[in-house]
Length: 270
Ligand SMILES: C[S@@+](CC[C@H](N)C(=O)[O-])C[C@H]1O[C@@H](n2cnc3c(N)ncnc32)[C@H](O)[C@@H]1O
Image 1 (cartoon, rainbow, N blue to C red):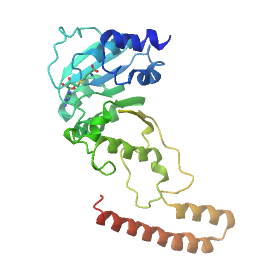
Image 2: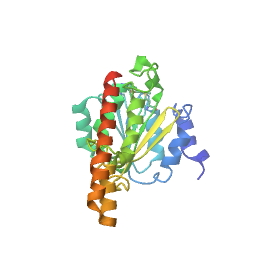
Image 3: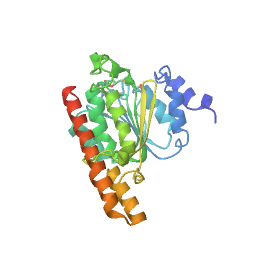
Image 4: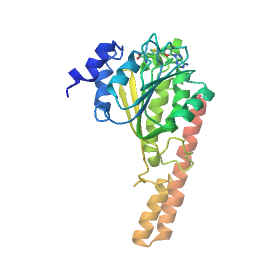
């Protein structure tokens, strides 16, 4: 079935603004193989219900759950369908989100099209991502607000601000957490849980999955420990390699770490 008679035509029927944003073709590429499955699709932000109606037609066998901070008149918006559920509450209200989780359990797809405020986008992600199924998808729309200080973004400090774009940029390090050669590495709650992060114009996708392949370069986040283990077990010359890797290389690592700590303190980067 071509996109002309599926997601695009359904989107045109309900006039969802996801079309003009250019999201529909991207969503179709992720969703076309899932279309007939029994999924739980959660969308933050209901408004006129255009996207809920689109998903309701597209994912015929799924439950479409919409949450919105405002009261939604489901009769008036024609959302009184069997496979649509609407709840009123804020995406950053922990108690409310926990209630939603207690009703539905885990979700297959989560789409954040709510307030688009940096603090809300990050809070919802922290609350909801743990309740995404394995291989589930978390999408965040309208990332342009990240570049706008009226939405909690920051157009003047693209690299180091607390914007939600920077949150997702930094999340990419979780794809490679195993490789970080910092012997003092502090584990992050998203380590081992993310297999893909994709950035599109104003749209981000995070794929949940098992990411636990061990590093071939570092042992417990230490390059020198890995090298010592490899070389001493291959050659039997433990003393020689102990001095080289456990003393000389380690001192270099610690000096490099101290230099970077001082640099970060001086530049106020924490
Ligand atoms: C862009 S509209 C959603 C459009 C809808 N998803 C669609 O594509 O047809 C954003 C919605 O988010 C809701 N909203 C704003 N802040 C929110 C919050 N903190 N929690 C939940 N919903 C919120 C607004 O009331 C508004 O209805």
